[in-house]
Length: 572
Image 1 (cartoon, one colour):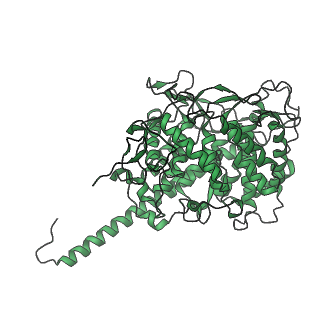
Image 2 (tube, one colour; image 1 turned 180 degrees about the horizontal axis):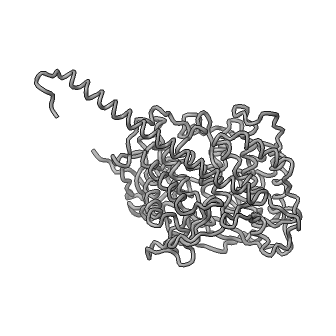
């Protein structure tokens, strides 16, 4: 394009500038309108699920949307014959507890206050019910502790009247009922415990790595809030015992015996049975500021990248030898890119996220298990129970890069959920992704996580001015100076959770430009990849260049030196 002969260069440049500004303004306006439209779609999804639960299932645990009835899933998991449930048992209002922080994030203070008052007057844990410690911890204790912190935050103004710590009273009562589970020779907790009577006679001693290693956030927060160190101490003792059981390759198995401290299943990965263990090491470091948690996570992350990673995928491997065991994608693995964002390895996060989304697009939702070596669905695990992990990672990646491509991903997820899983009575799980046959279950985590992360993707105003980490069940916990021995520098208020909106508005797609996403962080900080280890370090050895991967902050390939350490390839 050239200016006319009688057109001055300055006027021509000015016209180009005005045109560019006008085009950018239109683009920003279109993006804002889309996010607002999608936010309202997610809000409608949440209330369709919530209102049906309150109408047809409350105060029982979860909604059965096809029959518009209920299930007391929290206790039924451990009481398949229901022999230990009182005749008048009406559940634990599980979905209501899980919805508390989502109500706050969506701005419904009135319903939040009404829910808190009902729980404080009606909920009791003094019931003869055998429950799973891990599930009850992340769902019920986590939901209560998070909602208490929100309710007691004066800046939120969630209560018209006075809030008298009712939720904390309930959380402390539940925490005390957890403690007998830790009375084992190893300090590793039983997987199952009776809320009224403690550990049952002849209780199984088998548990998972996640079950032992994913308690520190909720129980640690409970200790901080009550001043009672027993909860944090019990969770920390279990975590340290688990850490001592790592193999020489710094890997962990999937299942173990709490009485003997011996591994039962040696194959491991980043999916079911182990996933939240890795997640809580990093998040505990952020929440409590202890360097021990960071060192543990850093060591574990390097081992995962070395022995489980295969390009953008993560297979499973034997913790003793590092040899691959199962080449499969599981839907729970989709949380991993979000965790990678938290510690700065955004290039790797982006790579894996795209593969998960590719599978989502292929089937319409994300199947529970997909066999990578055969490029086919697992024959018996074809279901999709409304899991949140892909939405969670999409939210984190958008926060870190402001790449509008992730908004498109979120829109696709929302449309799929409405197309395939929405029914008159709520949202139903998919029993078979090949036929989209539905199952009569609306899990509480659909409201606690799936809807929450999708809403935050399109409207992150809840996080502005505050730092939060989200538990593995999606419950926000504020990062507080008073909980830290020393607040990590990366998490004082210039971190990724507090984005400059005006800077984000000018962002173009890092993916379309093939730029390194880590270089487009709005904070302006130089965040180093956790996986980037200089030659001066002696705690990571490599055999080939493939072991070293790509540096997240420069997008340069890293090579394995003759001495066996990772360093950057330098390009002039």
